[in-house]
Image (cartoon, rainbow over the protein chains, first blue to last red):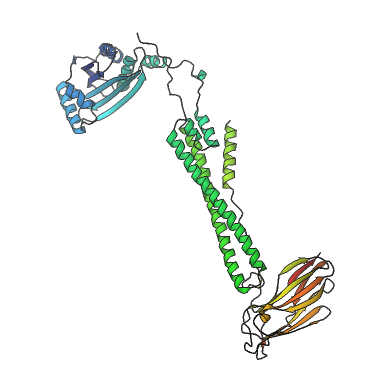
Length: 302
Length: 181
């Protein structure tokens, strides 16, 4: 449920050196956001951080426009028309549409930068982050910095300060190497270890089929060799012309069969080995890994 | 850790890339006209092509004619052997003659110092000649001293004859290697 939705519209004039002397219309849609009041300070902060020439005005945007932007079902053509219309009304060259939602401890920021001239999207950013003190505020400014091509070091530092201070001390229960070693030992084990059950079942089944094929081929090979030796002995012993001809045919048949089954063994074993190695490599690459940025414990909200 | 993994990788690879043995077969029964080491037929051969026996033990060697061109009614075989190693014990007419006739064929043999002459003639009244590969005679030898020797045909003295007493061509021969131990 949306507790309340803060929809604001503000215009940044003289938008960044990257886009020349252009103007930017910003539309924010913040739903279900406990920390929404912090956005009252966003405009001021952007002005401080990105230049005094930026001026703002705010107004409420119609809900239908927000819905049109937010909905995945809206057609691209409809969006493009709205963007052109809004751009003309507010005399802006670009429109930045931000949505921010909270799901539990995770905040999700989606930013889309549209060109009024073409109506198309030219830049997009999706950020998911754990809530931290002024985190939403900080991430919004970082996104603005991306657009302005002026990412402020203090904002980056503020984000980094939230990372786990001593990542070397983190002891990981599960590692990609652990997954690979297990898959070396038993195909699919590494995938099960990584909680990738379908993949584990697939690898172990595939490897089992190949190994079973090797064993069946080996059994057939052995039988062919035994039959061949038996027939050859009978052939050598026989003094009957007709019997010799029959035994000779049998010997030749078993001889070609033992070559055929040997080729099967080679083929299946090559496939099994390749598959085994691929399974281990797959286990390594899909093995359990820590998040790239490890955050410290979340402080209870006041 | 990494080296252990690569060693494991190597052994898994080695284990699975090993194939089984491919056996070569030698189809070399002397009675088989298409045997690898047989002369072009018609030929006189012994079966088996080699044998190992003990001193004072008896072994049997079968004399065969392989795929003669036409029917034959009789044969003279001259078999040479090393009398210092082997001794002829006895001889029997081959199945080829005895099985196809209700009468006993004429079968005589004459032992010389280092050879034995075998004469066999087909005496049937209704069937006068035989064709195809056939068993002519069995020769029983005794190994009298240890050594290796070859029992051979002397083709110059051997002869195949038709029912009209016409001599037939013999293209080759194959002996038997005997080891007495």
